[in-house]
Image (cartoon, rainbow over all chains, first blue to last red):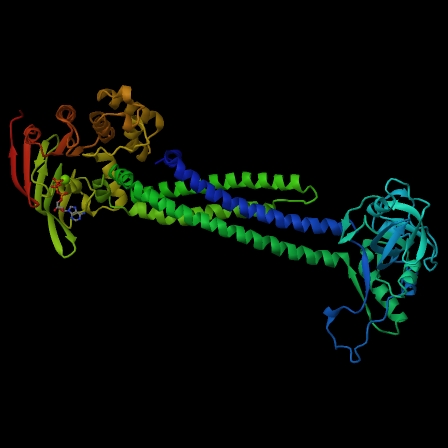
Length: 401
Length: 227
Ligand SMILES: Nc1ncnc2c1ncn2[C@@H]1O[C@H](COP(=O)(O)OP(=O)(O)OP(=O)(O)O)[C@@H](O)[C@H]1O
Ligand SMILES: [Mg+2]
């Protein structure tokens, strides 16, 4: 039998039983689509997080107070608390050649009020450098002035939401607001930034770091952001930071320096694992589809007993019958996979319309795996019905009406 | 052309053994017209299926065109069924989703013959059997007599050596039954060996060689002048 004739015969058999064929196609399509949609969402989540980090600049180092727990080592005997990370620590880092920017960051929360209106928001204490390291945009006025970071001057920059809530349509520049117990002059309003790493950049106030420390009555910084002069200096800069702080902290290694890169790599791994496991869940639905195809094909074989007996009487060897039925399931699997691809792209498109910020993306490996698994399950589960068809006894199959 | 010697076929159903064919020996020459008659269950269909290689005897020797065919494997037997044997059944056994022409084409498709050649041969045989008008009708759009004629076209389109018909008129009224038998006889006149099982004594008497079976044995085998 010629290949083209085999294909023709299989497709004519499939189109001869429209309801049964469309049910099997649907099952296969849903299986393939779920593999692809689930992995697309996982991949989208991975890209979303990656983009969030990328918007902060991946070559940034973050200095945190406290020693990293992951290094092990003996537990502190006296139960000492880590030494504070101070503004002076941050200033000491300015002296290194490897460093381009240093941004000390202090975070707290305080009510911000203007006339009768008041709003409790996060207060970010930092320096003019913040503008560069976090890639902020101004909608009005200017950012914190480039002054000595140790000087507490009474100016503030407002997030766009906060400015609107307090001032409505009035221009806030030049107005005095009360933050906690102190008064600050508004010198700028941020452009809308959205949420960046869990901090709503639209609903906060930024004041000079020295002002923030006195406002919260503390010496301790939340963290220090350091950007090396060059990406290749990342590891060297990390060592310089550790050495500098250790020298200042009487030989104690009581800070942790993490690079965005490392965090990013960890997130990447987590999300890849997540994507693969949701893809695996999708694959289960493919196997369910495979079992459905097997059952429906078994029914098809028993319904088409007379036809199979006839083919044998007309001179088709058992192997030929086998090939014919396997071709039918292969076709179902391929066509189902194709419809599944279309379904997946359609639903990805819908998700993108609903959440334009979320980068849904079907990874190539998921496409290949989805279609491949569909074909393999189709053939695997098609094998049993095909063999049953091939082994039918022609005399008994023809004697039935 | 067909030589059967000491053929036995035993079916075991539960504890009982049915001797469907008991020590059958039979010689058929090319071009013969044979009718097989006998009571129900006497083994007529089993004999036909054995000759047509659809059923394997439990013992005995079967030569078809001087080849010992019982020793062949599935693929080789299938090839003989494809090229040397034509079957016509009581229940027509047309594939319902295929048109008359496609049904007739089926054995040629199985043989791997090119579409052009197929179309020519199918067209020719449908013309001979007066079915050209019905070529693109599906079986459910045809009468019983027409269906059986399509089945005959399918059985003979490969130019087989022998045509085996198991109660070909069993599902037809007398007049379309007579038409079908006339067609078979016409093919026999052109040299095709014809073996036909029938319950109708009148049809059976039209054959020049009449075989009677009882309990898996041939009890009578007589030659006659054609009526
Ligand atoms: N597959 C089978 N399994 C068991 N017994 C069978 C089988 N096929 C045939 N037989 C038995 O073999 C015997 C001969 O059957 P066969 O079909 O050849 O009879 P027949 O002469 O064609 O009868 P009918 O005129 O009713 O068609 C019967 O007793 C039947 O019951
Ligand atoms: Mg019978």
